[in-house]
Length: 88
Image (cartoon, rainbow, N blue to C red):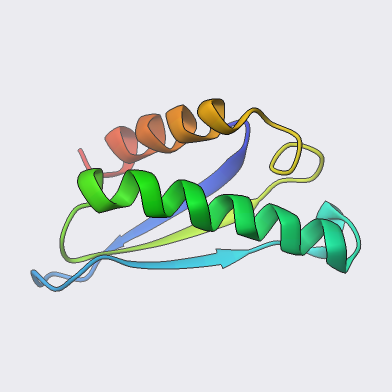
């Protein structure tokens, strides 16, 4: 996905969705990394509440120059598309 990389792991139970966020130094300085992670957190809060699969762990990895500058609606669409691919 253009805005981030999504990794998913099926734990094999029906527990709640768990999510993690990470941004490497390639994303930028601390201010840029924190801004990118705040955007990822908000996208996950909006989308995963309804579309996340129980029993899955997700990790969203920010991408350099894409996560912080990509349109917010496009980030939401990216997450929906990524979820449909990893939870088939």
